[in-house]
Image (cartoon, rainbow, N blue to C red; front, side, top):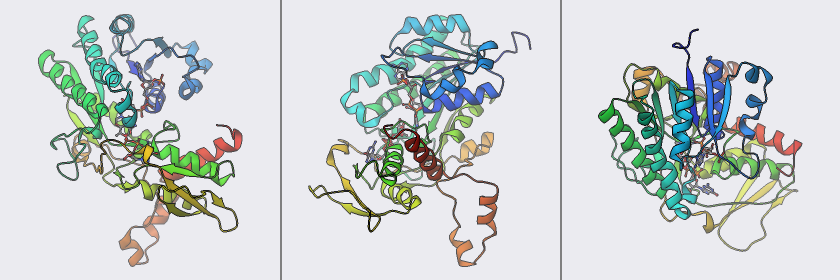
Length: 380
Ligand code: NDP
Ligand code: GDR
């Protein structure tokens, strides 16, 4: 392969959930992968340690990490000048919605202006015609939803500083595409989870807590709004859509979602169900909460401190444009189960087929991983 065929990816946010899966995926495809990491007082490369410390990766120079920050234009320009990427995946963000109410200015700096800085760095380096750019846009931009399901044409109504910042970035991407001809796409991704999900997002908080309660390491789970509905997919499926978008002939914006939603309450029920523990739901009182070992029942308490000043009550995505344009569809479901019609007709075939071809299940994947993690390291 000569240097003009080289595929060089730059991933901002490589240490995050999506960045780590994307780095693996791109390296398997033969890319040279560069990642931007921030300086921190303790190691923040846990999710990519297995890639970074792999001698083969090092010997071939297939993966390199660079210190930089979305708030520091000069670092972005320096990195882009040095590596001349062919694809940039902008995944870096202060990505926690509730935290964005407390760190609103910082969230805008990183998520909104940071995206502008990165797009401007491409221009400063004269790479408008070489680089393809992916922006991690989000279903949070739909916020207080105008229509269900949400698709590319659904109007936006952001409900948090995070969503407002991401909306700024979304429009900046479109503006730079139209103004300067940059191949730039917005992936409007709905929630996607995995065993690598950050510990303070609701799914991972639940699977970690259930694993701990199951192993007797913890005795209560406190949550906020149990009624929110989310369209949850698996991160491994979603990072493929990011790459597929950049392989198109023309840049465009796409919704990526499963087309199925579930409440937080249902997620809790399925996770405890997986370890065979029943739940008693409690309000905000001061009752003793915990697992009754004799009856195998756990109490789950609602704590108002986890509520948000403005909530996104429900999200459900329609990704038919992505399906029609580049054939993306999710392979990992919320759970492997029989359809109602199959239950009524007593048809086990499709269900057994799913199990046989190991259609994975998001909750099972996260639960198995957290049980394993807690067994190895109860203090995790
Ligand atoms: P994570 O929170 O797991 O990862 C965020 C990444 O951004 C981390 O690598 C983090 O570094 C990095 N980062 C944060 N601030 C800065 C900064 N100032 N400069 C440089 N890097 C920074 O997010 P996910 O992997 O879940 O999501 C990836 C992207 O997709 C985010 O932009 C998110 O907003 C967006 N998104 C996510 C969805 C989801 O359901 N997961 C859905 C839709 C959009 P560090 O490790 O040092 O903290
Ligand atoms: P979200 O994810 O806000 O959708 O943003 P999160 O998992 O934080 O919340 C989902 C829903 O669960 C409710 N909830 C709780 N949430 C948290 N974190 N902790 C709790 O204890 C709790 N109890 C109830 C929330 O109120 C909310 O309704 C994620 C992020 O990855 C964003 O970066 C991304 O853009 C969107 O998904 C799509």
